[in-house]
Amino acid sequence: MKNFVSHSLKCMLGLLLVTVSMVAGPSFAWAQEAQKPAVVVSLGSVEQLMGNIGYLTRVAGSPEVGAIVTIMSGQYIEGLDTKQPAGAYLTFAPQPSGVVFLPVSDFDAVMTKIEEMVGELQDAGDGVKKLALQREIFLKEKDGWLFASDQRANLDNVPADPKQLLEGLYETYDVAIRANVQSVPAELRDMFLSEIKEGFERTVANETDDDKRRAQKEFGGRAIDKIVRYADETDQLTVGWGTASKDGKTYLDFSATAIAGTALADQIDSAVTMKSEFAGFLIPDAAATFHFTAPVFEEDIEQTVLGLKAVREQALEAIDKDDELKSDEARDTAKEIVGSLMDVLQKTIEAGKLNGGAALVLGPQSINFVAGGFIADGKAVEKDLKRLIELAKQSKENPGVEVKFDVATHGGVALHTIIVPVPAREEEARKILGEKMVTVVGTGATSVYLAFGNESMELLKQVIDGSAAANGKTSPMTLNVALTPILEFAASVGDDPMVRGLAEALKKSKGKDHIAISSKAIPRGVAYRIEVEEGVLQLIGQATKLKAAQDREPF
Image 1 (spheres, helix red, strand yellow):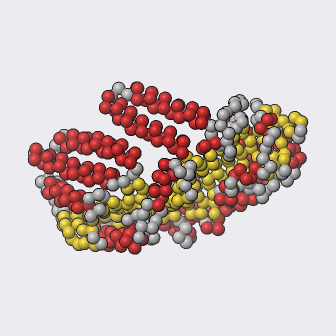
Image 2 (tube, helix red, strand yellow):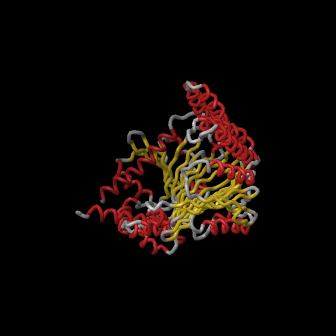
Image 3 (tube, helix red, strand yellow):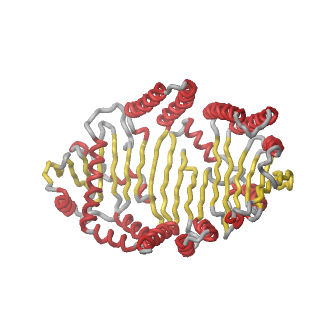
């Protein structure tokens, strides 16, 4: 174990130094003066990292791993200030410069440890030490910080307090990377974008199908233009991983901000402030919920409509080849229905917003699902559905199917039912759905819903009522999955002892069993978070142990 930890720490140090070597590279002069580093890397303090490693390994059921890491790392952090963060930064003005920095309480102790690990240090003058590896690495201490770079000149003007470059990232994250896009020289950004453009042009030139080549040129060209604009108008990109032991969760964040006053800033603002008409999908006790709301910008509408045109043509061609449509009249009717539905879809895109969601509710041997969202003309969809049912009646392949329109009305939404017999041979399906599967379709003036399950009618009504009560207040995008009801459902319909064991283990999590993805508005930007609660970590640890126990069983 000691050799393993030693090797791991050497690899970490080597990775930092190699990274510096790669990003610093040969010196070039750039015309643009960067006010902030182009890239900063933030690493939490030793105390923070060790505490969170201990927490994560403990909840995963392997506290001994965290204890071993803490004990074995002690000798390698000698001389470091364990209460301060560490990091690295990359700048391009006046020349490319990459520097790693560590907080130190005893510089001599750190130098001694480095010599023990990777070799003798040489005196390079003015307090700078040199380490001769495959590439020379220079080290310098200043005001309680150890700076490292592959170029001595990079250490001539290091900041007095490099912690300020991290802009507080270490307070929220264990590890984070932030790119200040506008600090990357225009020449370098243009070089990168040129590579993308050339690659795209080669792809288009190599396409032998004329229709595909035109489509690639049309759609790809717009995408390239958008990438160029984003490069010009994006301010910061940040990725960070953190742990909140008091709240019982760990998380990964992605965020982006735009330059104030740009079109991109206006677009982001309109996206994160748009109200929702379907927040009722966020049912608290559901096994899974999903909700989204997003604008469709004018620059995207034309491109999307062109894509829908191609889909329409493919669908009409498929109808001509469908052998189940026995007459020209049936094929003409099918084409009319498809054309009408595509018209509604196009109008929805042209309305400039996407809004909807879904919810899955599980119980022992019980499943109910509902999905729906905004549509430009729900009544047109209802009309097409009725025509589709009439067309389906001409087929003899679905005996016993009962379709009833306008069974009820709730919140301005007309509710229709489709009841399909479940064959007796499908024992597992009957165990969950009963002898008949109930499907409910809801059509409102600007909404369409689809639900199935024995309690799907009540579930759909709950969503409609919840959406009205929410009054449009919700985040732009939310996905929430609760593992306890999923595993309990799986255990109720199967006979897998491992699944039953995991379901039983999750009961100890006291509701902290969620995996969630959400978004929120931040100044001039938007942030997305992937969050995992400690019950999920416990489940992973328990699953690992159960799998290991199964593998050890001789029979």
